[in-house]
Image (cartoon, rainbow, N blue to C red; front, top):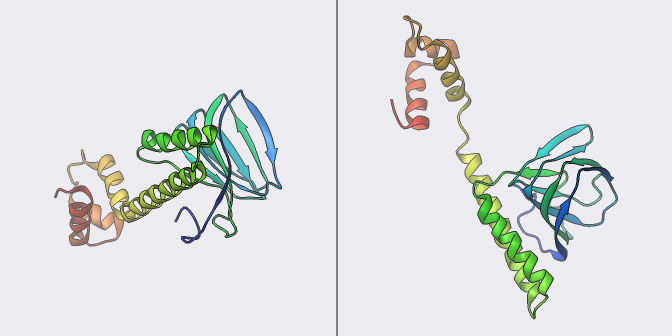
Length: 195
């Protein structure tokens, strides 16, 4: 799960668009969550000695009180600051959605609604936020259930290296992976949709 709790409510503080130059900055003691969508540019988040790079089209969730260092080049991004009584993330998380343009559209609509502040804008922003949450959870669940089997990945790697070998065979590949050739054939058939 992208969010560590699947039953939460939020209060949106702000939605804004950032167009900034290269910078490095430390952040800590923030009382709210930040959910961002990178339109353009990379950012490197370093927290507790671990680094994570966000690229164009990535979504990043930063929990409150995160102590991290951010280094970025020129970038453009949307950011939602929100409060949540429940713990929904204990560390910085990143997701690379399969349809970033659709996600971009949701952030753009939320930003426009928040900026215009027409009657009911808070409900519209909250509705769009939870539409985004739903899409992120669906995408993450799909990615987890369709994760390639480690043996299949190793088999493909082995095949790519040895397919020109005159002694190459399914049995030899299976033996290299320490699995049966029947199991390898089944994995290959399910994962690659071919024999």
